[in-house]
Amino acid sequence: MERLFVILLYVSPDFPVKTDNGIEGFSELKVKIMRRRTNRQRGVKKNRRGGHISMEIIREMREHDYEQVVFCSHKSSGLRAIIVIHDTTLGPAIGGTRMWPYKTEEEAITDGLRLARGMTYKCAAAGLNLGGGKAVIIGDPRKDKSEGLFRAFGRFVDTLGGRFITGEDVGITLEDVDLIGSETRWVGGSSESSGDPGPVTAYGVWHGLKACAKAAFGDDSLKGLTIAIQGAGNVGYHLAKHLNQEGANLIISDIFPDKVERAEQEFGAKAVEPEEIYKVPCDIFAPCALGAIINDDTIPQLKCKVVAGSANNQLKEDKHGAALEDRGILYAPDFIINAGGVINVADGLYGYNRERAMKKAQGIYDILLRVFEISKQDKIPTNNAALKLAEERIELIAQLSARIRKGPGKGLIL
Ligand code: NAD
Image (cartoon, rainbow, N blue to C red; front, side, top):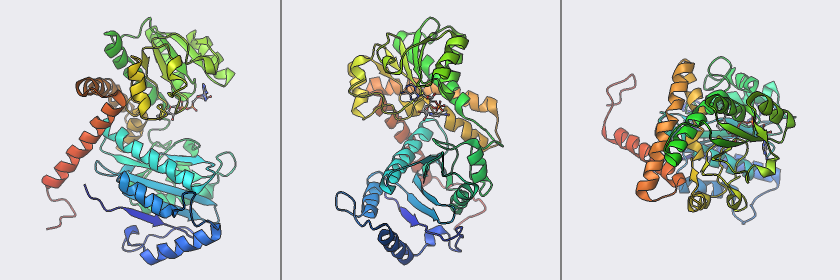
């Protein structure tokens, strides 16, 4: 499908102002001038490979069909942020805002692009009527936060008029989300709506683990199974609670001793050192800490039958999905099993109902079984089966919009 894509470069001495003809109307020339000026200021014209960074972004946007990239700058608060909208076929793009001390702007853009695309697939597979987006703020979350920074960012989000809805991600707290929300209504997961998504994510992961047990062991009960959890943080802790209540045996690792002790005391979990968690004999290994932990080094160490946990981007590279399959290990694709968080935030957009959000997160059980079925039928690794499921839904809805005109609404165009 051919699509118009847009790059906006906002460099504002003050808060941005909405133009009459909308943000798409931002003059080409002004963008060019701004680009030249920022290049001059930075003294950086070309990247390592000798190409202009902007050309690389455009190439990347074309290759993976991104809709829009917005650069935001507000001098007096120190805000430097990038908002990426990947795909709005299913609805407005949703995605948390990440604050991170990226070494270069290029690194921040790359992260934003990658994460926004992941959100498209996560929402599509979870059955949400939302597209994929993400925002990154360049800065150290321990030092660079201020009211002005988040309110300036909130105003930029607002200029997109609801095409992008944001919330918490790495480096951003509920208080920060509330500050962003004081300037725009396009936030999810604020303290006034669905709040911390961690417990609902854990609830979805628990049901995902049950689907994995059904597929791998023929029974979805986790009672008596040994489950090794990497990371006893927000999601890991709540997951351990559900598993303990169901009668699973737990092994736990974390880099912080207090988190390990809490799991030992409350759930009778057996603690192991962080680097030991890959090699412990267990039925299910549940990564709930970091990305890229399924890789060439760790796959040969694994002594489990299933890998299923909340961490984002668990596979270091796509090929590691096939490598797990070759070792006879069932992999629950991360963006399917950890969708409880976005399901929870999405529910808050329609007047939050915790029970409804939990019920939808429970549906991850059936979605995972469907992914395993596709994987078997098409003889493809489960990570590719998950992408196929998501892409098919996006395509279906795109076809609907192309063929079936909706009834007249307020904005009827004849
Ligand atoms: P968190 O920061 O509360 O917990 C992560 C835990 O992992 C921390 O306790 C940390 O000390 C521990 N950890 C870090 N490095 C480790 C290592 N090498 N070995 C063992 N433990 C280590 O984060 P969270 O909200 O629980 O999220 C966990 C994962 O799930 C992240 O990858 C996150 O992106 C993903 N995720 C979270 C949500 C959510 O709703 N919170 C939703 C979707 C995905």
